[in-house]
Length: 121
Length: 379
Image 1 (cartoon, rainbow over the protein chains, first blue to last red):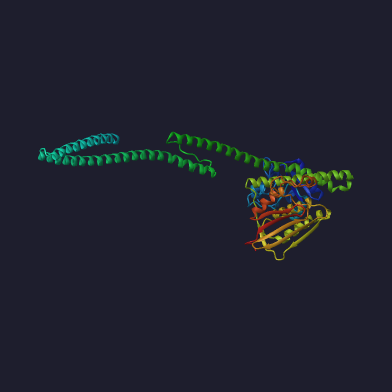
Image 2: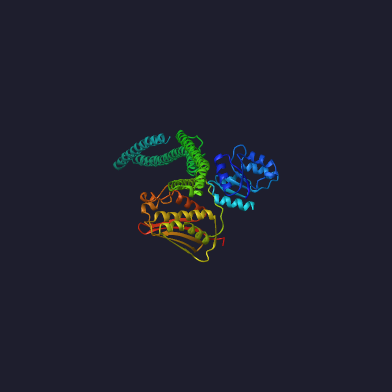
């Protein structure tokens, strides 16, 4: 069981991700943009997530931008980037940005759940 | 000048002829007198004088003839030279603009839309040049509009397929959620959810295909080849489709030549091609048909072939089989779930790998699709 911080600008997708992850026994925190992700992580280590699941494209601050700032601060929490298609996200993400993997839409939940277990165990 | 010379020459010739005639008459009269014995000495003198005069006249007229001939020749040469100069001037003033036109037309035909000519020279070539430039302007305008439309189309498809993914993720994701609790569903509800799932998967396939095509058109379809055990890749694909062929009582044979070399391909893309070919064979063949997959190494190529003993492809369809939105016989496609884009994309993908995709078929005898991939280098 892991604590996962999920960020997506669509409430529907957030509900879907929360439901599926909670069904698999994970604890889920949510954010609707990159700034919320950063704010959540700044709130303290007690609630610190084991994994970030960030949508690549969000208004205000994208998952990629948020991750870049967090990595600059020394946050090394593993991160999965959710994107419409992998090469679109990969094109935006600098190669030196530490990303554990990409999740493409529509989401293959079996693979996603397997990745979460693998990255947090 | 020559004309005047010739006229004078004719005039002088006439006076020469009458002088000669007069001279002969005088000589004849003297000879008559000589024959009659009247004043023979004077007659002889007249004869001699007339002969001398005639020689003189002859000499004069010869000189005159030569001069006139020279004059005429000079006139002709001068005329020809003048005409030639005039002509070469004309040709020169036309040649450069024409050469420029030919050059510009060549560049325009070669795709250089900025090809124009300088307007100048004779009014005819200037008109031609202006017409050419106007035509080139029009072509450039149309081409840039077409480019812009193409770019907009590509952008649109990319954006649309991107934007449609989020709602589709929800549709498919929540339908899957329902399926996770299938024991709570009635049979009718279960069937309904299955229809939702089938259709959302079909939409995803269509979106993926459209995205691949748009990328291919925009020159953005790229592959990342890695050394790959092609034999096990083929085995994987065959294994993944076996449930479907068994459900249709179709025989699925696999024959992989031992010791196939590793080849540089992007595994997901080659898998995509093979899944497409195998799905086609499965969907277009009737119950109980045989499908055969082979992988062999020949020369510097690895050939993957998918053949079936199904209905085959009519000759008139075979040449269009790799075109977009081309699908087999309508009677069959009712139950075929493809997008009509699979083969077009497969062909692009195989060609991106430096290989070829070809189809052989005779109606009633089945079809064979061959993927040939270069095997050189990455052994």
